[in-house]
Length: 482
Image 1 (cartoon, rainbow, N blue to C red):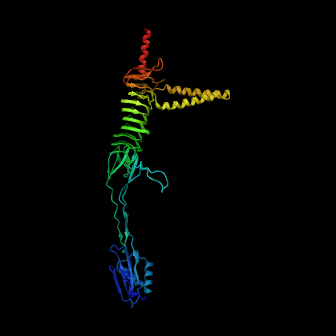
Image 2: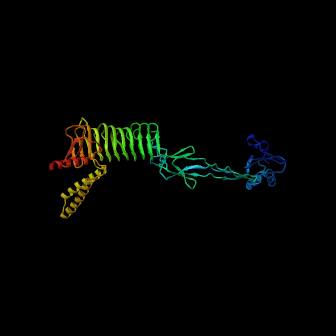
Image 3: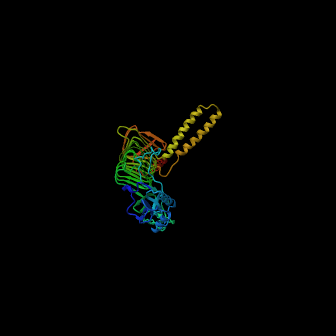
């Protein structure tokens, strides 16, 4: 028997809130919580009396409803320690299993996120603060996410041998907004339109428009949106926009890339030689400086275009002032109040052609020049013959491109006020650089019958250059007949 039995420190005493079983040779303390998930037992031996036996322990546990999930090995060890006269505190003799409550029904997004993280390993990867977009783009018919059903949970069992029922998960109460549908499986949400997925509380929808109420900058990051984007402020330098259905910017645009399959409109843009616009519709602006532009429709500017490189399948119209510096290729014609500048800044205008063909034509001409050089350096008649065949094929392709015409083509330039020096104009097969300024209003077209350019009183842009030249030819024929 231990000499320390009567001198148990306070911190080592059994929990007084438990069940006390007093016997001549010992005292048992059972600690059983109200939920009957466990039973812990403490043993305090007395100086006189018999030690605890296995039967006594079993009887005590049964008497106090400890009927199941008893740890037999722990009980045996407990009795052995008791027989040696050792005090034991809060030994776990029986342990139930807790219930696992069910999970609530929830929505799980399955469409990929558009948030951008720079490349690098996990430790070195950093978020690009210019690309912090958080919303998710979706396309018509694309799966957005799924409603994951609630689960019933798993029952537990207490030491009385009784089951512990779990709390089942709650059903998600949600609302389907516009442009979104629930599939027949009852769980899959699909986009009924192209746009951005929105979740407001438990309402799901797909929005086709996105409005930035202020500047587009670090707060929003660059935006890639499958819809119509409106910015009610400026677009700051190095923040780019891609919006499939159109872009409207109330303010100005800095050194940025703006891309849309629809119309684009803004106040002004200074691209500083690095900004660019790709527009699938009509482009409208107050002014544009030093920007590369590719446009499928018309480019309509209120005040001025300076030092831009513009390629459009439509018209270029500047209402109040000038086009000066840079280069313009416009399939549908050009009209401006002024062309060039008083300082004779070089301005290049190519009108009435598809700029896609211009790039191809340039490449073919370079190949033809290289082939002609090879012909002059040919080492044999056989080699020369093959090179001449290649040159003939290139010539045929060049002629074919030069004679391609489309209904939208209008090789015509209108100048309402002033045509300055050093403006290079190419219309059809005629190219001329202005060496002496002219006053408007004038229309400039190719003089097909005599060569060069024809300067005549101005007509509207709806009047085709081909019709103007045809009228001159008919007039000449009529005069010859007389």
